[in-house]
Image (cartoon, rainbow, N blue to C red; front, side, top):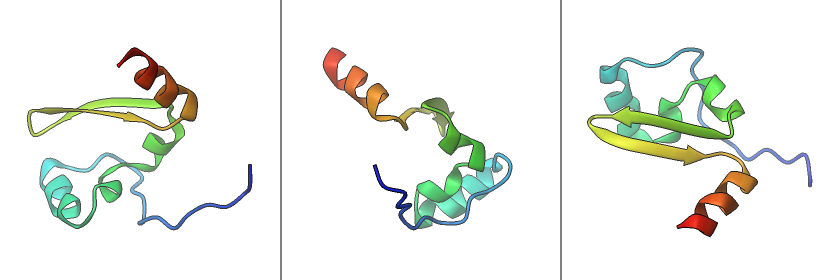
Length: 68
């Protein structure tokens, strides 16, 4: 692997309020997540009555597609 890190929007230090999620989410969905969310392998949350699941690690993605 390389040390390349693609560009990304500024990350927040804490969770955003519901109003801020709507504000930032209109622009792009990466900007609604706090800095700590990118350190986890898997994230499960609920935003506006929708369950959101994010796999941040290749092994987790393989596992999800294997059992899908």
